[in-house]
Length: 118
Image 1: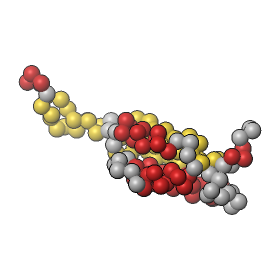
Image 2: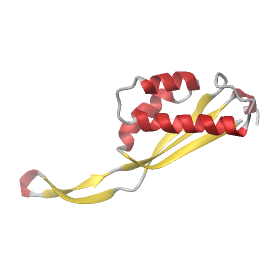
Image 3: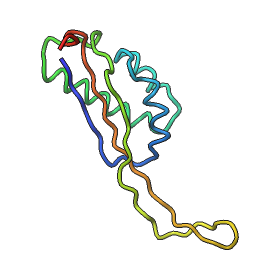
Image 4: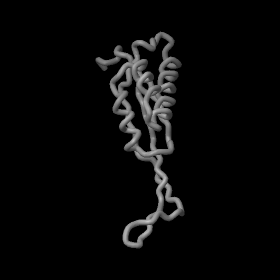
């Protein structure tokens, strides 16, 4: 049995969120939640919300699924839209850069070990 959850247009950098996602990929769900709760990274809070949503989706799909059996099968972060702010940031040699507001899409897929032969 497999379930997934996605959060779109979350504020923050993809590169920083991937550092946290790499910590939980392939781990048991209980262990992944523990890692996210005690992580000092800012992206860990939004990733924890998506993981809890994926767990709830798995429990909704099948009433026989156990939290001890679930593991993070797939987890990745993609680049969302980048908005340009009209503020100007000073750059070298008298130039100016526009500030950019980064967004990301977080996808987490959880599964239990029963459907591996398909």
